Amino acid sequence: MFLSGYQKTAFRRAIFHPCVPPTKLYPRTALFLLTLLNLLNYIDRSVLFAVQEMVKREFHRSDAAFGFLTSVFFIFYMCAAPFMGPLSVRFSRKAVIIAGALIWSLATLLTAFTKTYGELLIRHTLVGIGEASFVILSPTFVADMFPEEKRGRVMGVFYLAIPVGTALGYFLGGYMGPKYGWRTPFYVGAAPGVVLAFLLFFIPEPPLGQFDAKNEPPERDTIRGLVRNPAFLTATLGMAMMTFALGGLQVWMPTFLQRVHGYSVLASNLIFASSTIVNGIVASISGGWISDRLLRRTPAAHYLVSAVSLGIGVPAMCVALFTSGNVMITGIFVAEFFLLLNTGPLNAAVINAVGPHVRAMALAVNIFIFHLLGDIPSAWLIGYMSDRYSLHAAFVAPVIAIGLSSAILLYGMRFAPPLHHLNTDGIAGTQPG
Image (spheres, rainbow, N blue to C red):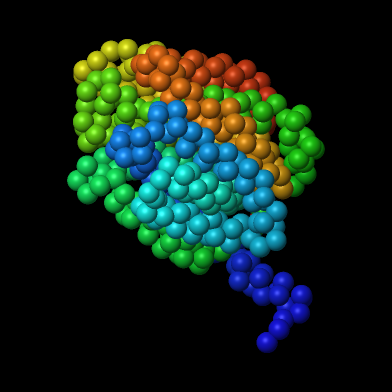
């Protein structure tokens, strides 16, 4: 039986745009599922970092070549990002998120079958395309379920998946790699994404911009206005420098502990993963809660918390990189805490800096910039400096980037937009229906 164009459109809307009243949006359930998917997203990325030295011994490639793998992933990731907004309009955000989760889960499984460096490059390409859909659209999905004054802590919960997922990837690879071979962790990491994508199908999609102002100024709610939106630009550039630092550290820290300090594959991954998972949970939630509380006093709270935490992270990072033994391990824990404290506030700053109708495209631009200036060059650059000088010397670059990020966000405080749902006394008011 053939359907007319009108019938096809109606069918798509019935499947992907269920008509559910706003009171039945189940925001916490949706946040839980999306956070779990985000967790798998970052497990997938870090498993390879955990077993990188083992893969290098098999494929006989340089540090720069393995840094280039991460660069290829982010190149395709950011190039696919601008297409996700139009796709979400044609189908729905939920449909595109589900499709992307299936693509990256299957590509993760393919990693277990790679036999050459070229096949690893292809795998990173597919995963980058699949993950772009999730990272662009899921924050807009979450933002439309919660009002502005709750988005710091909500984004803290959603983005705690970054450090926690990264840490679990290190645990998974560090434990299973030496015991069962480096390919085995990828079998374990692929299946849950398929299951969660299926469960997400039953979550209704929230109305676009239901908690945002109805008449946003042009610089906040048009694509052209992004280049005249200093709140968005400073948050994005600050995030780029932070991503340069964190991206490089995530790729090379286990290798640094093994090569410079003589730790085993398992011990190095346990140290870094333990720091990342503890600080990921505590710092991500704490940062969002602190900045939401400070919003009662200043609309620049998200920028302030991020800038201060990154500033404190600079000396802590120096301790982690230029000492040894227990002092070094303590330095790693303290530095990661302050670096990850900005996770919720900084992402909330980006979300709140733009209006709902341009938010998906703004996140695509945000991702393009912070990956282009952040983890695309950092993984390769640290690898290159390691080949040319030493891995120890190469880690100076992330320290400089953290300081630049703090400075940019301090400057960006003056451009923070006012909140729409706080009254003149700074107390949350009634939300629009």
